[in-house]
Amino acid sequence: MNRVTSAYSFDVLRRQAQKRLPRMVFDFIDGGAEDEVTRVRNESDFDAFEFVPQPLNGTSTRDLSIELFGHRLELPVLIGPTGLAGMVWPRGEVAAAEAAHDAGTVYVMSHGSTVNIEDLANQSTGQKWFQTFMYRDRGLVKSFAERAKNAGYKALVLTIDNQVLGQRERDLANGFVIPPKPRLRHGFDMIRCLPWLLSMARTPKITMANYVTDERSDILSLGKYVADILDPTMSWRDVDWLRSIWPGPFLLKGVLHPEEARLALEHGVDGLIVSNHGGRQLDGAISSIRALPPIVDLVGGRVPVLIDGGIRRGSDVVKALALGATACLVGRPQLFGLAAGGQAGVSRMLEILKNDIDRVLTLSGWDGIGDLDRRCLSHRGDWRPRGLHGDNGDNASERLFASQDDSVGRDVQAAMPVARSYGLWRNG
Image (cartoon, rainbow, N blue to C red; front, side):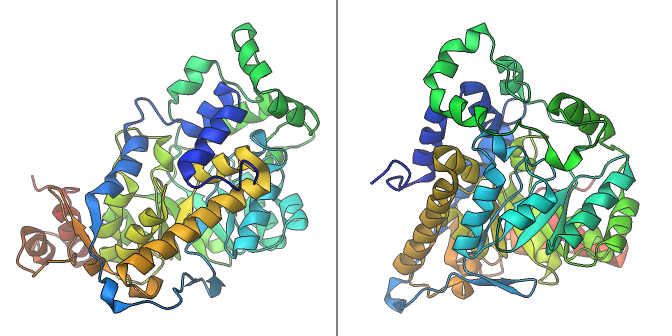
């Protein structure tokens, strides 16, 4: 049994990645913005939810599959977009996409991948989505959408929480740049990670392959170019424009507020991804799992609502689905698996999730994903989504959900009670 196949949890894969990668590279994938409060809460806020099992229901074969945009997925987990995955394993995006296909799920390609749109489509099988930012250079965004369409990508994801780059202080402390340039103080660390160093030396130079032109090809000039064209003026007008040129499913990633979810429906968005960029952008932002329930309630099943951030166990997936998420995305965990063992490591990561989910369903008496709803959960704490086990409709949260505000328009009335009940929107 090799190192990767013996891993029994994400934490083991994380430790294996930490052992194999130089500290500056590991901190790049593991770290968050500033004090990393949001990164930590993305994980810890799952702990406030507790299962209320009914084991005497009995279960036979638990069905973990879901339907998403007309496709049947064998697992309610997608591999989320992570830039520069090829920095932890040679051509890591291809390896991870193949692992996703083997598991019967979707790979979401990052705009910042080390292989380009066409190469990933040609060198890997399975269903793929493409993720982009909105740039001042709208021509670049349009070209990404057209290239993804022509290469057969099934959905387009627009990340909306990237008006400027977050301050990632581990990277600043390590003197991290792309590609990694070891300094004298990094010497021992690099010797310790000789297998990684040799594997990277045998592969093409790391770059953001989708941005390469005759004028720009090295990562330093590309990195500066991308940072310079981030657009703080991005608005719903830009969402409408991108929606108009993309023919397939179109999702927004980075939605945390119910009012933004309401507006997304008005603007023809086909799906929402509740996400705070893994805590890598705005530190102090609400955790994804805490933001999820009011958005689910407002959307009311009209479009799929996915969640990204903090998934570290199959039990986290079950909790998110019980709260109303259609599916979950994993980012850092697939990078840990990739760093530990390439495609085999990502496959093991997904296998761990699948086994965890099945075990939780079995022990709880639920026959599949379709059995999950909020009655499966209880909650410890000072905030509480409606519909949980023991909720008789008489608690303060339920009263707030039922309240109306005559001073605002009918559409906003739909969003405000939901947000207020979670402390997201206060009167006065």
